[in-house]
Length: 256
Image (cartoon, rainbow, N blue to C red):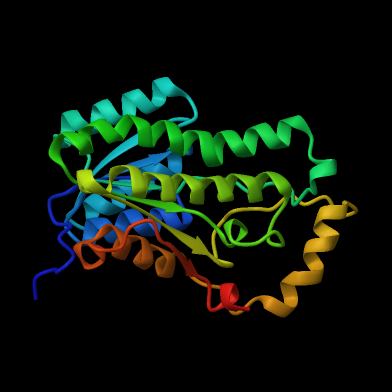
């Protein structure tokens, strides 16, 4: 049976695709017939994802670099357009956790690193991709937000602020560009099995407060593939009338 997603032949950029949700998403898009640009700071992980796509008969392009650097962003978009003729789908997935620090114990380095990677990098890449989507009058963007974008008890100050910022970007994009055929949505993952490590300071105030909320409210831990399924859905024709939405993928955590 042919795919009904409308993704076959489209060019898709997936950031953070060297592992976890990004890797599962890149593989899922490739299975749907999309041409996938695998982006990650981790060269080994990105290369492995790219090889897996090719081994499954798909088309992949691997780009390694720090997307908070405008030069890397420009290189990525330029290589994508050269290889595939444009950008049809952008998945802003790459991100890092903070140390669960409360605001009063968040130092400049933690704040600036988290905001730079989680919020500034998606802003830069989205801005660079927009002209190509506007030129053809269509495009879909999906961002990986977080439960921390919906509440104040799921992470530290820096991560929470960065993911609330992502939701703001998504909603603003949806309003600003819907008449130009561009959709922007986000998923808000709950606890998911990935390789992301949280280096929380054991005696800090933030982690102590968060521990009060977590055990009673969480459901089961999800898989990267379950998050990828939601991302691909939002990017696909099946979600053609979905714009500006933030979809919790969390076994009901957001409903608690």
